[in-house]
Each structure stands twice: as C-alpha cells, then as structure tokens.
Length: 419
Image 1 (tube, rainbow, N blue to C red):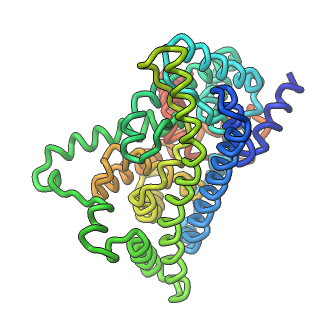
Image 2 (image 1 turned 90 degrees about the vertical axis):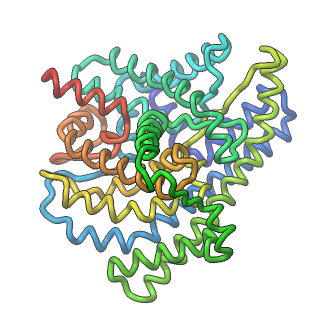
C-alpha cells in the first residue's frame, strides 16, 4: 500500500503542467492519432496550461497589496485559513487514497464503454474534490470503506454533472469537445447561479439589464475593451484600499494584463484539445454509432478566458474580505479563500450567459455562502486534517468546506445527527 501511495503521490507531484501533456498524448494514441500529432497536442495543452497557471499567479500577485490592506484589519481570529492546496494534498494521505485513483479511472471507462456517460475525465489533479469529502467521512466515522465509496461515488457524480452542462459550456466558452469536470463548481455554483437567475427573471427592471462584455466593447469601442475595463477596475480597487499612486497603476495594469492573457492561454490549450476532440469524436462514432459523443472533462480554469470572470473576481475579492467582518461569530480570516474566488466565478458567468450584473450577483452570493459554511464547519475541517499526514496546530479552515457540496452535506449530516 505504501508503494502504491508513493507512486500516486509521485505522479501528482509532477503537477498538471507535466501530467497533462502525457495524458493528452496517450489519449491521442488511444483515439488512433499519429504519435507526432498526439505529442504536439499534448505539448500545446501543457504549454497553454502553464501559461494559464502563470497568468492566474499574476492575478494573485497583482491583488496582493489589496489583500494585505484588508489582512491588517483581520486580527483576533482563532482559526487559520490554510488554503485548498494544503487540504487537498493532505487528503491524499488517508489510507484508501491509493486505491481510489485506479477505481475512479476504471469506473469512468466502464461507464463510458457501456454508453452510460459521455465524459472522459482527465482532470486527475482535481480528484481532491472527491477525496476531501471521503477523507472527512473517514475522520468523522472511522470507516475507510465508506470514505472510499464516497470518493468513487462523487467521481461518478462529476461525470454526470459535466455531461449536463457540456453543451452550454462549449457553446458559451467556445471550448469544443470539452466540459468541466471539477465537481465542486458544477454541482454548487452552477445550480445556485441558475436559481438566482430564475429569481432575477421575476424582478421588474433588473431582469431587463443586460451588461455583456462583448456587447459593451462593440458599443464603447476601446472604452469597453477588456484591457481598459481591467485597468479601471484595478485603479478603483487601488483607490479603495488607499494604495500609493505607483501601486494603483500597477494593480490596474496587472488586472488588464490578466484579462488579455488568459483568453490567449486558453486558445493555446484549445490548439491541442481540438484535434484530440475531433479524433475522439471520430473514434466514438466508428465504434459506438453516429450519434455517439465524447466530452473531455477538464479543469474549471478553462472558463477563465471570459473577461466577465476576471472582472467579477476583482470585484468579489474585497467583498469576500468584507464578509469576515459582517458574518456573526467569524473565527477565521479568509486569506486562503481568496485563491478560489476566480474559479467560483466561472459557473456564475456561464449560468448568467455572460451578463455582468447577473454574474456579479451570483458570484457575491456564492462567496457569501462559501465564507459562511467554511466558518460553520471549522471543527469538521480540523478533525478531517487530524487523520492525515499534515501536522496542524489549533483550529483550521479551508474553502473546500464551503464550496464542495459533498463536504457540506457530510458536515450537515454530522451536525444534525450528532455523529
């Protein structure tokens, strides 16, 4: 078991940038592409994802002065927000984790071959969205088999959630042949945003407001261009947090750069994914009939190419920090939580069809619920980490206990029944 765990961890330690090209290249060969074409597809996906990661890192670095401004207000909190990377990594150290990976892959292929799903999930680094609820169940009830069953069950749920939104995902973001298989966002943010949009449809006046970034650019010319919008949003945030003039302009340029660079990085990824998608489609039609479809399950980060996502992110960051001061009995300051704001906006924008006002309302509502639930489930988060290899002191918090529907449900069951 230790050897298997080390092998799995070594694979994951390669990171998405190294792992993606290998997986995409193998997929190309499976779908009967020539080796050279498969290798190029894998490299383009890896290069695009590397660029995407660097650009998201740029966004994080750009907003750091804003984060630090609010962080100085955040004294007196008793729990530490350690971030999803630490909690996700820790979830891989529970006893059943090494068994989970092959079972998830096997279950996916069986369902695909049987025609019961159209999604092939290659988003292996996001298996943490399945493992964290499984690890939580193991920590609460001491049953490794239950933890494994929850982990594999949620991986299957991710396939069907991804399949349900596949055509909307492709149509809106232009990501042909793919879908989002990041469970937390497809099963929480998208349904929540769908409901909020239905409610907005019944509010006179508000329902008719349509602020679309593309339409805005067409009407306002350069002043509606994502670069200019990013600059203005950055300057506004800089002024709001009383930054130095040079810092203010740097924040504006950083957000403007992100708005321009992310779509470019996604387009590079699509240069690799498009031939894979075409080969997969041809393979499925040949072996399973003309109506057969295959969607490649990918990270929610691919949706960050839409300017509305980054615009909502920039606005939601100070609002999320504000929640720390208005939610009653807050025990943690949401520093780690800021790292997931950009990813939560993707499904909000998708469900709102790019309408900036609606997307922003959905994003704020999502971040409020996430911040609230994380605060409520600090004891459960701390207990989950106590059965992992991560050494902790005191109480800890993480966004996974606010935006992962599986984790939230398990926490509610534990509290309701005193288990």
